[in-house]
Image (cartoon, rainbow, N blue to C red; front, side, top):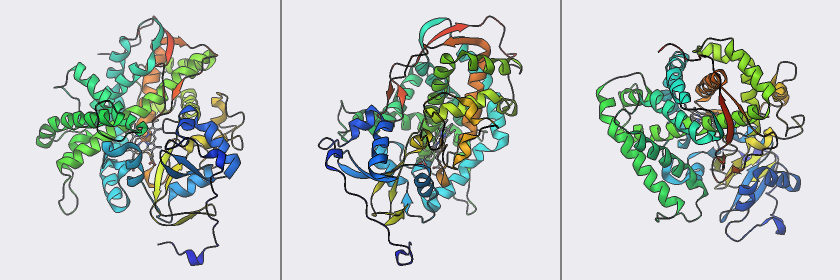
Length: 457
Ligand code: HEM
């Protein structure tokens, strides 16, 4: 409980200026969809760090800058909850996934899921990933305007399915495409204005997508309950608490649906941004390729982590286009943040992506300049939360190290086997309705390199 009497008096939220109210019902939703950073910049200069905004029929609070983000994500006053805020944004489609749980229940489930992310397991996942990546990239031939984004999405979904559920042998490639579509529909529910299960609404598509995902995981449940294997699906089926409690079928299915979404959408976005910038910066592409060529075809996790240039490029791409540009929380009690009182019940938008482009912390933040993360500059050290693509606090991304290994493994194989270019003037048309993605599928001009690059079969 927060003892307000002991605290210096906080100011009330400033009123929204007449010109900032936006459209009826939608409020500023279209401004956000057009360019969230332009909208946040305007909020920042008009209101400061804690700013009210009208969107989709309600008033939100937007927290801008690393100090405000840190305070909310660390949640020392235990005044913010994930579940109700995320449920408002993406509806019931990822219900009871880890990110939607709060307090003790969240800690308990997180401790169990951490078993799937130990160093030993991450090393084993990396070893297992190489053949799948090589097989997928073998289908990437010479092509002008190759749309990398959907191809990457297919690849990362198949890696996540292999790694976290031990494969899906009864599911045809065509049905797997429908599973991929179902994930997309659930994520895109965030942009639904009409929140009703009707045939042509985003909400309706997400409802059907969720049903398909449930059928998919329930189909494999009996075999995972019957056999103990090394994947998370099986771990979730067999794990017991000290009192002998086990996850019921619903819990297992809910965790798997959220985890598979979290595990492939974000890596796809990171990879596609890296392809764009490396395509536009051939010097960096070659620098990364030279380091990958110096390694064997199937490096270990530690070797992948040692690819210095690729690491700088990944960090810079996560800065320039964070796959999760904002996260949300609901104030469960009146709470003061940076000297402003946020009333109980308010949904708060925390904005890592805005911190990533503030010129207080970054030199020429709009430029692709991976060396800013190098040992001589370390611009990310300007503030603990200046670079926060994986969030912070108790909900900090559980798959962060997995994502690093996966993204580097895919890039390693691509750099050894292919070259590509992107027009230096190209600006990705980002769709910001839900998690950001390039509307044009991220076209690249791709050429296969002629050397033998595969590991042994
Ligand atoms: C570059 C890739 C990734 C990025 C940028 C990213 C980003 C994030 C962020 C910002 C959060 C915090 C959400 C919040 O605070 O409300 C989060 C949570 C989470 N992520 Fe990731 N993620 C990535 C990859 C992955 C992967 C590959 C997995 C699984 C293998 C994963 C699993 C999770 C889980 C389970 C949570 C919920 C943690 C909790 O609530 O305790 N993520 N991620």
